[in-house]
Image 1 (tube, rainbow, N blue to C red):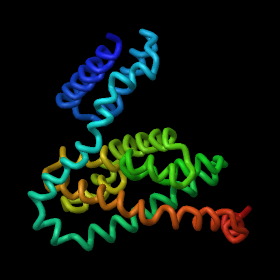
Image 2: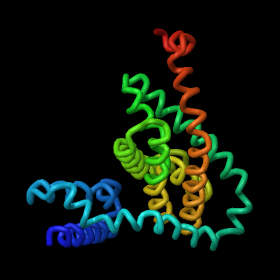
Image 3: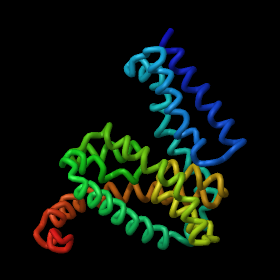
Length: 239
């Protein structure tokens, strides 16, 4: 019975927060932020164990990857435009992934995080299933990586539109790329609110980001860490 309640509660809370967000679309009312908070409060008040809740809500996790595949539909509809800007998107994704991984390692290194936490933080800028697999490959903790991915997505959801306004971006290509590369699935969801083309570009950017991170991270992370631990890096930082 508790398992069924967990499933229905997740469905109802998400539906309710989605309705609220549709009436008042401000970042702090996003279902991705409000829904987990309400569920955590509910689990605490009714003393439901996380294992019981996970059993009831497992269907949502199982649907995550098929839902990601469904992003191919708007990409197909906008395929002519995607072909036109394929090299710009590819260049942006590769440079974006290098910056994302590098900045993650730099932040983690100077926050004096352990090696496991550093490896867990490195793949934070790609979608959750890919990030967790990469974390395991690098020697990180996948569950911690999932937290970093969520925080990155929320930061992109809040700051992405601000950056777009500050830079006076008019191009749907640029808007989609910045949201898809920087904030993966959360940013892609926001991009679809801006328009179908923005969403399609964000979808492609997110998929390419996952591919780029999978190819780059195993070789890039050890080399960047070696550089950050080198005497030359210490000299540059004034240590």
